Image (cartoon, rainbow, N blue to C red):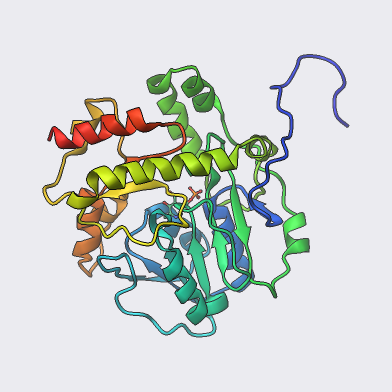
Length: 322
Ligand SMILES: Cc1ncc(COP(=O)(O)O)c(C=O)c1O
């Protein structure tokens, strides 16, 4: 029974902004993927080498064989594998710039395709393939992932049995919102370690926060910032940025012809992540030189909805000063 009286909880009221229409909401991208593996029980899964080690965790946990594949300059599969009945293939909608390509893969692989939308929160499922995202990569929430399933799949009973995630911390969210970014970083890292493949539903805390997001405002701002960057840097960008009208981007992927050290940005209080140092360090008998080069030299420039044109200009000036 719930307690009556005593001290107050955080004042969180459910809003009415639901962007995603799926019934299935898990603790993390890995938890969604873990659930897919439990349902489909594949013997082998094809996975892009150009991804982080976190993506591999559910395969390790379930002892499922993986085979890495290579991507080309457009981040499309170099050699399309033929997928057997008991196999799956994962493709990442990189930077949310690969929607058309995802549609063509879905036509080919149908229910054998799992689309990793951790860089494409705003992509919805198509009822043919599996799609999952990761909410905390786009918003100030502690956990969460939406899973869309193929039309013929009904996870209802299996899903209802699961508990909600309660194993998360929010200190980093509170500290960053009061401007204590450096102080909050260690809490952010701690919360990252708590986000794993455990089969749990998204926390009530994160789903309530998400119901208050102004998704239209977020979308507009991200698109404006992305366009600003592309206008300013597109002519010196070696990464092919095309067909992005439908995208609600994650970062602006900037691949300069002369590599720029990320420290240059850090000195100016601009934090550019590495996508993905795991690729550089991963030991593997095949070389995957292209993926390692991209991981080292491609700069994911922040364009999210917290920022405006003046912030974009600061980033562009930093690039130009190099
Ligand atoms: C490409 C990719 N896929 C999947 C994941 C896993 O998402 P989550 O951390 O929500 O489990 C990550 C996260 O780091 C990722 O970068």
